[in-house]
Structures are given as C-alpha cells and as structure tokens.
Length: 411
Image (tube, rainbow, N blue to C red):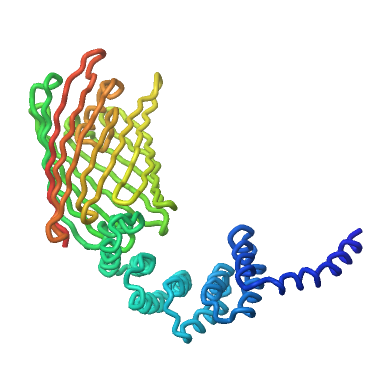
C-alpha cells in the first residue's frame, strides 16, 4: 500500500511543480505567507519565496519576507545574506530596516542593530516601529537615557502608542540611579476614632544591575500615640518577562504598625501590553495574618487599567478586598491622573494596622483620586485623596477621609 502511495506522489509531483511554476510572483508570495503564518512551515515558505523571486528578482517585499523567514528558521547566515544584498541595493523601505535590525537585536548584536536603526530613521523619521525597536535595544543594553529619548520621539509622533507608553513607564523607574522621597498622610474619622492620624515617610531608592532597592522609614501618630517603622523592598529581575517583589518591615510599636510584615510576589510582563502579579503578604501583630494577592493590568493608549484582590482565609470564612485603578497619562510617565475604587482594606494602605482587629472582615467601601506631575523630569509631585465608608462594628458604619502629599527627587 505504501509503495502505491509513493508511486502516486511520484506521478503527481511533476504536475504540482508545473502548476507552481505557472503561478505569478504575487500568487507564490501569498502561498509563502500562508505556509509561514498559518502552517508554521518555514522550509516550504522559503522555497515558495525563492520561486517568487526567480520570477521577480527586484520584488523588495518578497526579499524582506524571505529574510524574516530565514530569521524565524534560525538560519542567521542566510538572513544576513538577504538583508546585506538589499542594503547594497540601497533599499530604504521601513519594513526592511525593521526586519534587519530585529535580526541583529534577537542575535545580541545590539551595536549593529542600532547602526541599522539609525540608517532606517534617517530614511523614515516618522516610523513608530523603528523608534520603538530602538528604545527596546537601548533598554536591553542598559542605556536607559537613550531608550527614554527614543520613546519620547515616538510619543511625539503618536502620543497614544500603547507599547511606547508602557515602555516609558518601565524606563522611568530605572533611568535615574537614585531617588529620595518624602510623603505626608492625614486621616480624619467622623465616628470611629476621636483623634486624627498623621504619617510621614522618608525613602531612598537605588537602581542596581539586578533591580531596584528601596529603604523607607515611617513615623505615625495614631490613637494619640507615636510609632516608627523601617521598611526594605527590592524588585530583582529574573528575565525580560519576570521580576520579583520582595519586601519586609519591622516596628517596635505594635498597634501603630505591625510588629513585622513580609511579602513576595512574582510579576510578569505579558504580551498585548498586559501585566500580572501573584504573591502573598504577611502581617504579624500578636498573631499572623496571611493575605494572598493577585492582580491583572493592561495598558491601552494613554490609559492603564488594574484590578487587584487580597484574599484572607481563616477558620470561619474568607475575607476579600478588591481595588480597581484607572490612570490617564498626560505628557510623561510621571504625569497622570488616577481614579481608584474598591472594597476592603489592603496591607499596602497606611491604615493596614486596622487589619489587627476583626473589623477588616466587615464591609468597607473606598473611592479616591490621585494627581502626579513632574517638573524638569527629576522633581516629582503627587497629591491624593481617598474616602472610606467602613463598617467598623457590625451594622455600625463610619467615614474616613485621607489626603496624602508626596515629593520625590531623582538624580
């Protein structure tokens, strides 16, 4: 049976070959694209593209496509040969420069990639793809200032570029090696507590080759008593896709702050401008409270959307906290308006010491807004206001009003 089938293919092959030779360059190009994109059959796609080029040797789009398929098939030498020939012909097409520089970038020749990108941008100064790729290449080399300049050029062309905005925000965290900051928070209660709360935080951030490290000291006056806390947070990088959050804090003033807290999260930069996080937070007062957290975020044009939950299991039930955040970025990553709404108390809030009591299991609603702006890129200011309506005893609710001011100097 197998012999008969093989004999049938042997008879059929010349007719198939003849029919493909009878196709136009455009028809062969279409078949090559189908083989590459839909069937992932790069060998067949290369053969079809080569046949198309025999019919139309000057068909630049097919040559660029052939170079791309060689790249995807990990035949770097063949891809470079195709792109070098196009370069010698003086091709100025945007797609050619994108494909050629991508080959070098993916094969860790960043210097060559930048050289190609600069030539491409000379010929196509309004190319969003070339500017974005240039920013990515510089980001991968650790030249964050040049990466920021490339992103800024792209955002001048298209202020609503989702990918550029996402990269700009990531770069803003690492472009300056150092940052010092101070925050002041004020809380007023109409029923739950007689005294207003005050909190001051001073922080120092250092960007290292393995990620950012933040040291923070906090002072608080709550319940008419004073307390201090020391915090340390780190964001070590695992890969271009994954990084960690690792944090810890200690205080000798239990009640004003937890005795100590820890936290670890795995963060992921996902395709389509999504991001996600999963991890835990632990607070210790006289007993431990364990909270498990997950979040999903999405960049879209000038917007960032995020939904976060904290889940706290105990012997009797499971407590939930949900917070939704929307940011609208204006002129840069440091300039935005934010709107926040949610339920429950989270350990990241200044009122996390309320988690020490049973009240965190009762109903809480929160809503607020925030405004951040920068002056000369290195001076960052923030102001936020939040309203809480909390059931602090069963069926008894009270209101809380928070306002927070912050200033950060990057250098």
